[in-house]
Length: 375
Ligand code: GDD
Ligand code: MN
Image (tube, rainbow, N blue to C red; front, side, top):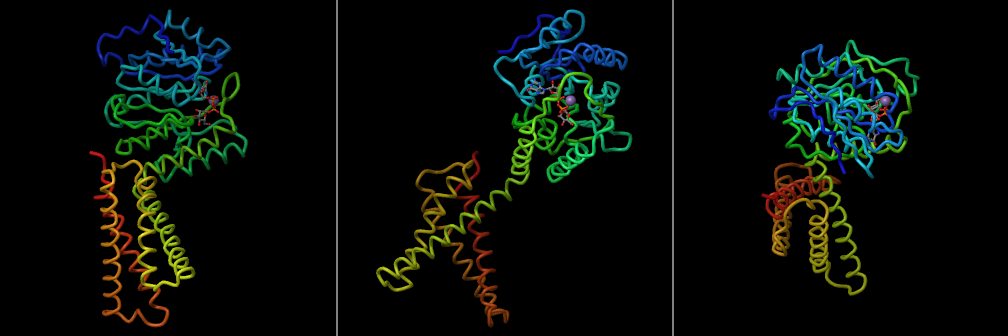
C-alpha cells in the first residue's frame, strides 16, 4: 500500500518540475529532516524547481511520520510502503511517482554530498547527458577515512562490474537520470545497485561521471548486510547475462550439445554391448536419441524465452541437425582434400573444425528458425 501526503509540490503540467530527488529510507529518523531541508535549500539556490520523494518502508523509528510532517512546509512527499522491504524497489517506486524531467536517487544518511546535487542534475536537464553518476574515483572525488578492507571491497565491487558498464564507481548509489529514459527499460528491482541496473539496461545512454566526496553516515546504522553483498554478485551475474545474452545462449547451446554427445555414445555402447547390432545402425539410434534430448533441453533451457511452434519445431530441429551434420562432413572434406592436416593425429583437428562449423550452423538454424524471436 502506498500513501501519498496530500500537499504535493504545486505540479501544474507534466514537466513542471525539473527534478524529483528520491530518498529511500529505513530507520533514518535522525537524518531525514536535516537532509530534506538541505536538499530543498540546494535546489532553491541553484534555481531548480524540485521536490523530495521519501520512500519509506514503514520504518519502526517513525521516519515516515517525520517525512510527512516535513511535507507541510517543504516540497516533500512521503510514500510509505507497508509489508515490503527493498532498496531498489523503493527507488523505482519513487521514480514512478515522479513527474519531473529528471530523477535523482540519494541516500538519506548524508553520505551523498548535497553540494553536488546541482552538478548532477544540470547535464541531464540541459540534455548533454542522459545519466550522471556520482563517483568517488574520478579526479576531485573521494571518500572519508575508510578502513583499508572497506576500500578494497568497494574497489573490488566496482572492478567486477567493468565488463557491463564503463563506470569508475558503479556502487556509489548517487545518480541523476532523465525520467523518460526510465520508462522503456526492463528494470529488475533486485539487490542494492539500482544505479548499475539502470546504466546497464540503458546501455545506449550517454553517461557522465561527476566527482563526489562520499561522507560517513551522520547517524544511525548501515543497512547493507553481508547478504546484500552476496546478492550483489547474483545481480552482477544477471547483468552480464543481460548484456551478453547471445554469448550466454551459445554457451548453453554448446553444453546441451555436449550432453547429447555423451548420450549418443552411451546409446551406441548399450546397443552394441547388449544386442551386438551393426555399429552403423547403433550410430543412427545414437543420433536419434541425441537429437531428441538436444531438442528438449534447448527448448526448455537454451531458448526458454523464445516462441515455440508446438510439436512442428521438432522435425524442424531434426532438419537443422542434419544440415549441421552435412556442413560438418563438408568442411572436413574440404580440409582433407585441400590440406595435409588429416595425417597422423591431425584427423582430430579436422574433426574439431567440422564440429565447430556444424555447431554454428545448428545454432544459427535453431536461433533463427526453430526457436525464433517472439514477434
Ligand atoms: N525504503 C528503503 N528500504 N530504504 C532502504 C532500505 C530498504 O529496505 N535499505 C536501506 N535503505 C536506505 C537507507 O535508509 C539509506 O537512505 C540508503 O538506503 C542507503 O542505505 P545505508 O544503510 O546507508 O547503506 P550503505 O551506506 O551501507 O550503502 C550506501 O553506500 C554504498 C557505498 O558504500 C548505498 O548508497 C549503497 O548503494 C552504496 O553502494
Ligand atoms: Mn549509508
